[in-house]
Image (cartoon, rainbow, N blue to C red; front, side, top):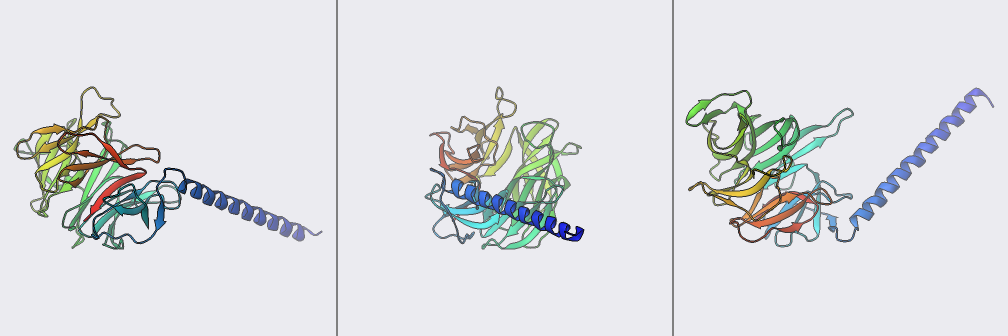
Length: 340
């Protein structure tokens, strides 16, 4: 056998082995997906059409269940949040939607490291625009009219629980495409005076219905503040301390938020509260566990939020007036939006 023949035989053998290995991996992966998909008590998921328009009331969220539809946006009837899911094929790390406009924060997997982007979606989940995100996505919101979208990303550190982190909160006009990459460009009014500091951070934007007013968290000097923002004057004004990840109620009168409570563990320091914006009276909610999420208002009386679960996260609901008790409404789910 000549040297050339030996080399050809060796190459052929290596190619065959690689093919066998690849087929084995794919077969094992598919088998694992089927096994996870059929796991007793797990959600039933089928591919289909997902839209951000109302058809009797639906919930759209990121599916966390292992299987072929992991991380995809899925939809269920809002009246049956634990029911069978329809998967869209669109993957998001964080998501929110209102009035036929969605914002999807995605990972872009690269050969060396991942990068991230924000994609503005239309009512059929088709891309309208995309923007680079400078770090790990953590929060997303759309204004009630669909005109504005916002997202927050960690650009240093990776947890709100500590103090060694930095965030960027961006706002985009979805009609014009005009982007404000960071709310740090806005004028800050603190205690009635213009305020400047190198350690200013913003996160957790929530919009009012007037397409002008928003609320967010401002951190500076080791404290967090609820701020009211004005998109026209590009100004934010502090309202109250110890408020994080605000979420404005549909009637615009209250803000749900997470509050650091003395005595809780440093890595799980928050409880859920609701703040009446007219009286500034706080109401603790009936959820006894620490919640690291920007809660979503199901309606004027109910809040929905994520807590750790077997698949990564589960969704829970609790009354907004401090009564009742929390209940799990959906497993393997995060980043819900209600489509009416």
